[in-house]
Image 1 (cartoon, chains in turn blue, brown, green):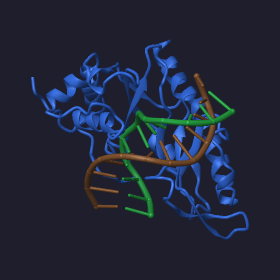
Image 2 (tube, protein in one colour):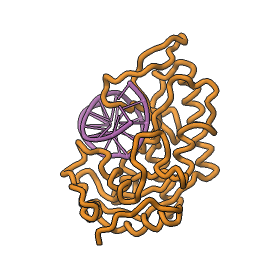
Image 3 (cartoon, rainbow, N blue to C red):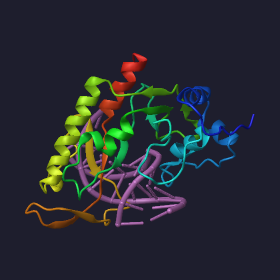
Image 4 (cartoon, rainbow, N blue to C red):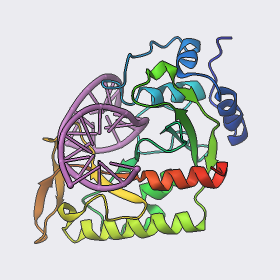
Length: 225
DNA sequence: CACTGATCATGA
DNA sequence: TCATGATCAGTG
């Protein structure tokens, strides 16, 4: 069966398509889609994510939008170890460092992206070839009240520090569930930000990431791990 | 095990 | 350069 899934017309169809992939290895999925499998992910860090986009008919592109804007769904792969724990933090989006006056949580990119996520667990570890890793059962997730509150709190605290010119003081410990960390091509990449005295400074671009404790909890909540 | 900062590929 | 897709690799 060499079937490329077309753009799903509904969330239910998308979920069906994702469920049909569970149990497949990454290598098997790649073969169906006629995609070559890299020996490791060192030079192809986003490869599995892109393979799933292709498999599920997500729109490509680099727009700051959800993967399925018409369905209001964001697609994310989540690497999981043999014990069911996330191996990595989850990148959410780039953090705005300028023009943030009046930016509210309700209008934030973090909230938009995380309002509905189709998580695709990928079981494996770093010592395992990408093709050997297995697709787990998908999880269509919307933050519950508690999760939404934590995300909002963290976002508001971090954004306040940024607006106060304190971006360089922010560490990955500042939030309970969200982290702010560098997100760039390399350590030399620079972008504008607000400095301690309100002046312009140059700093490394930052991104919002979900901590592994948070994604572990969301899996536990749904799969009763 | 979590945190940190760096890094890789690709396209607009 | 910035946005998408992320993981690597060293430290504590």
